[in-house]
Image (cartoon, rainbow, N blue to C red; front, side, top):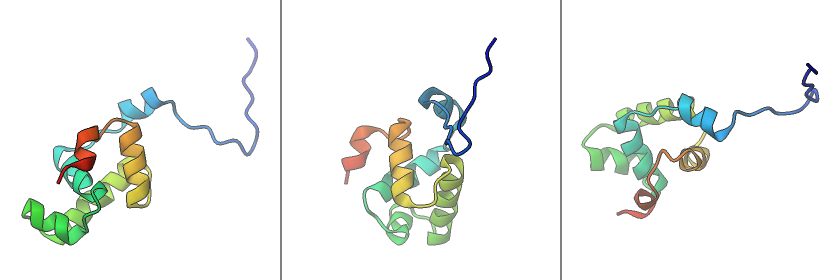
Length: 93
């Protein structure tokens, strides 16, 4: 069997199916992310969910870690691509 070689600088990313199996967000993380992708600040999300801003930031940090991203835009893109956020939730009030 021939060995598979990869260029030294190549970025090897998992397939969509592999990523989806690995990423599991809690219900609350999905709620927070849904509000965030609608453009709400952490304070606005906190007010909507009746929690502290610190709690929202905690959940966001967990989301970033699980999705391997570092900001809201990246989290939105990755979560949407993985089907973690329902399409209609992106446009809800």
